[in-house]
Length: 125
Image (cartoon, rainbow, N blue to C red; front, side):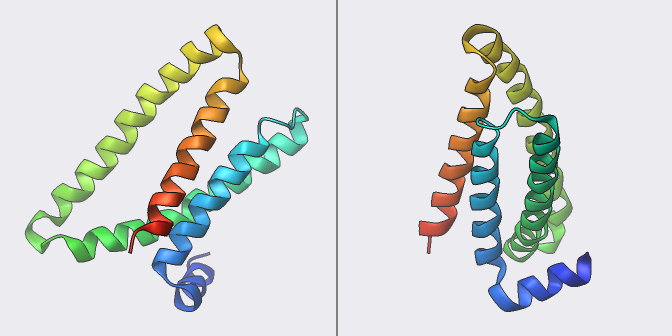
């Protein structure tokens, strides 16, 4: 898989791969609203995982280029802590929102957040 990812990076570049990954995550996440078949949901979740996998190496290479070698480890630690912490809080909030408004509301909100990330990445020079 790493060799495949390296070829993608070579042809389309890091920024484009991040933009495409976020766009794919947003679109696929939005599809979760409409499909209720467990077979299709499993396929959608696998595609979400693959899209997320495609965005991480490019993001981490940006961080390694943007930070000084002495604080690079600390910066990666912050990124992983923020990812896990925000993920935990969002899981709790998703459960609360699903109990109050219905199961599809958290999925709509998450898809909207991914589209916002896509637009930030796409329109930032």
